[in-house]
Image (cartoon, rainbow, N blue to C red):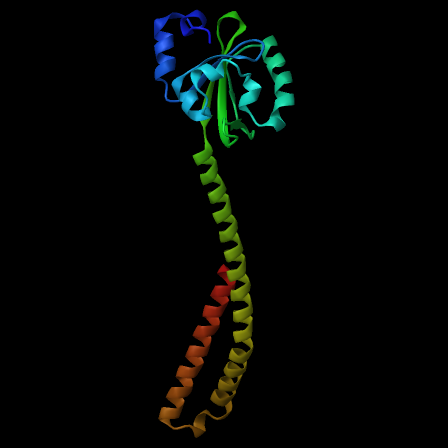
Length: 207
């Protein structure tokens, strides 16, 4: 591979690239990998020497390769800093064939070369997928609870209404025939029927 100092400006730039925690690649105008840092070696599984025989398309799944050649040509016509991955599904390809989700930022350097910084976002993607799954499950549970509350409440409403009607009839027509204890029991029954009816209405309202 070409020496880092031949591509990047100055010793400090080379040192920063070597010490960077994220994978960094310098790509030539023809798409060949000219330079890779140790983090790229760890991420992709290639040795630094092996990177020298690769094109940038070798580092992505086959399904993305054809379109990427056109994107490289477009970038060469308007080189600028870009952060890729926002709203896109980007994946890198390891030497062992494993894929990983990635975001990528690219910047032009000297002689038409491009500096690409590759961020492994597999963990973030897994968390996002888990979050989506949990939200979907919660929505399903909420819908089931809503249906359950509706069915149970309506199943309770009918017998409760019958009990309430009977209690009201007794209170209106038979009250004087009840002793004090019977009247108290009737009063408590009507009170509890109304309280339960209000509780069921509340369940229906908030379900």
